[in-house]
Length: 134
Image (tube, rainbow, N blue to C red; front, side):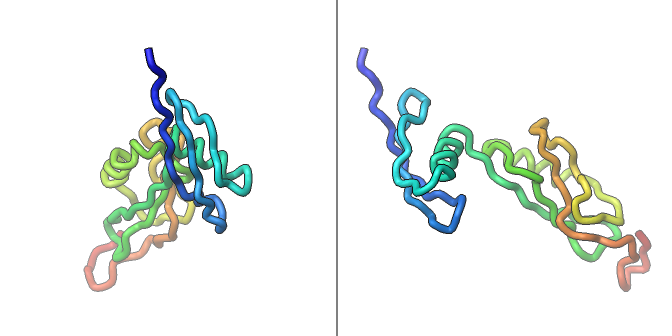
């Protein structure tokens, strides 16, 4: 039985302005080496990105009674393979005015342990010219 050939992946670290070019060697689903990083943050980034990539999610929600959409984001990064499901869950949200920055809009999205929060204030005010009240 022959051993599988190591997979060498090239990444650019985004943890600081240095933008180190990383070479990550992966064998049998395990990171064996990380080269090119100037600091330990690059090593940690490479291992996380190869084994369990995560991303922040940002989106907009239409809010009845508001002329402006509500911008939201995940409080921390979620697994990359859950992004589209997260966006669907956000799209299905119904939000009522008023909203304050930091309000939890969707707790524990998809069971990830991560909340979706508001990133702006939306006051409880009628839409101008619509004749509607919030």
